[in-house]
Every structure is written in structure tokens, then in C-alpha cells.
Length: 284
Image: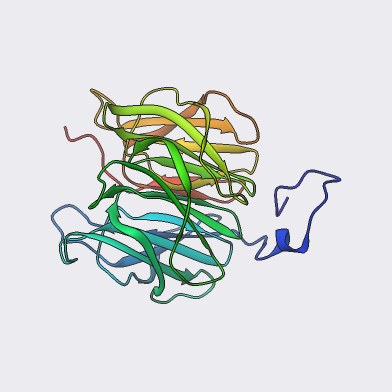
């Protein structure tokens, strides 16, 4: 269960690197709040206790609209937008050691400044979807890092469609990216990559509705992956939760509803419980 391997499957020692049954701490980059400036605050939330968040540390830059990914030992935040950043957009990757509170440390950079990107990972690699870029604006760029090592990201391949503000989910084998804002508006496309192999994404299926600004982060049981919240044409924010079976391709199914409409927030979880929160609600 720790590594999403089926009974009798062949595994290697690398599969177990960083595996832990703890899986209880979620890190949330605060971003910005109503009427406030951009923040560098990172909060921690305990999944098991349903408790209040507490301060964990600070990003290197004050910014919002970051992408994220993690192993069981390190949490990564990449890119983002902040008024105090030259040109507005960042390409910095920060990392945090999840077991001990403290400020972010410089990990490296993605290839270009961007915001509203995404991320998905297993315990070894993080796959970053580059968001709205200062260079290319809409793009289909996927890049990766080895989470245990610091350094700049490397080209992984391309998504099947140029987007930003995507959703994501993953298990130890596959990373899936969903929806986003494209040149034609919001889309419902889900595509996937095999994390261990570089290459272009492959079509997976479709969301239950076109959607952008889904909550960023990963909620997955290892078998099922989830996409929460977002907005679509005529709806400023939604309660929808979609799910997919990660190991197979096909359209997403309706899982249920959040208890409020929300977009551009966070989602995270262990294999038992998923959280979705913060973000924006209906403007009315």
C-alpha cells in the first residue's frame, strides 16, 4: 500500500525510497488574501486531526498561483506571480523538508517565468506543467526534476494541448493533467504521462465538464485520482469533484460535491482522506 504496488508485483529498492506511512502533513502556500498583498507564508495542516492550520515557514518570494508537487519527505512549489517580482512572474522552485518546519530553500529554476502552472509526482520525480508564460503565454510544456536532488528542471515532453490553470493527480506510475484555459477557452481534456519515462502526454479522456482554475495539488488513493473545484463558462466557481481510475484511460466520473463553490485553491491528501480549500468563491 505504501508504494501503490499490487499483491505479488515485482518491485525494486528505488520504489521504496522516501516511502512512509505518516502521510499526514499538508503544506499550503497561502498566496494572497482579500485586500492583502502577495504573501510568502506556507501553512501546515494535519489531515488526520481535522485541526486548524499552523505556520510552517516562508517561500523565497512572496507570490500566488504557484504549482506544487512532493515526495513523502520534500514539498516543492514552483513559479507563480507576485507584484514584488521583477516582471511579475517567477521561475523559482522552492523546497521544504516536510518533517521539520522552516523556510523554503532554493531548489533551482524551471525554464521560463510563468504562473498558474501545475504539478504531479511520485516519490522520485516531480512533473511540472508550465503555466502562463512570459515568453510563450499559452504552452504545452512539461518539465521534471528529481525531488531528492536540487537543480533546474529538465524538458519532459509536451501536453496534448496548450493550457494554463490545469488540474493534476498522480500515483507512483502516472501523472495526469486535466482541463485548463486554452486559446478556445476552458477545455475538458485529460492527458497523462508515465513518470519514469520522458515523452509527450497521451490522451486519457475528458472531465465531466470543461473546467479551468481547478484546485492545485494531488488527491489520489493510488487507484483513483481526483480533480476538485474550478470554473467554467457561466459559472464563476464550482463544487464539482471528478474522479478517474489512474491505471486505465477513460472519461472522468462524478464523485460528489465540495461543501462550497471554490476555484484556484489547493487540494492535497493521503490515500484515505483528501482536502480542498482556500481559493476563490463566487464573486456574487
